[in-house]
Length: 137
Image (cartoon, rainbow, N blue to C red):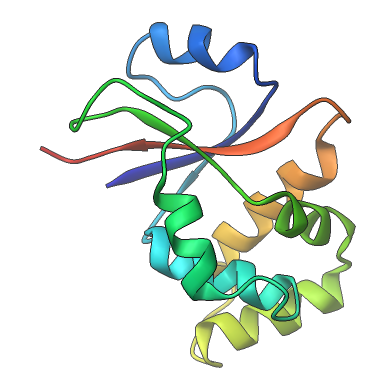
């Protein structure tokens, strides 16, 4: 599974999907799937979003070209808000919780968290944080 995080407005989504299989500008996320992203969303919201409730929300495509993809998925607004407002020490605490204290500087969990936080912090009021998902064949 290839996952790419990006910012867009709702009207832009269909155009992006129609443009082909190349993800829009943003950040590639390595080693993630809806379940572990949902667990991160639970951590960054202090448990206000649970993994059990967030997994289906992340798995549900906002738009899709079919089973093989690509598909576009929305990151919950409450998680985007938390990610966009977090400082470095808060992100470090989240990373430690998410990776179970078993991570190295610059590894996949850290890159994923920093990419999501960077995009969330850059978003304009009309933009939402989305995931572009392409299943491996």
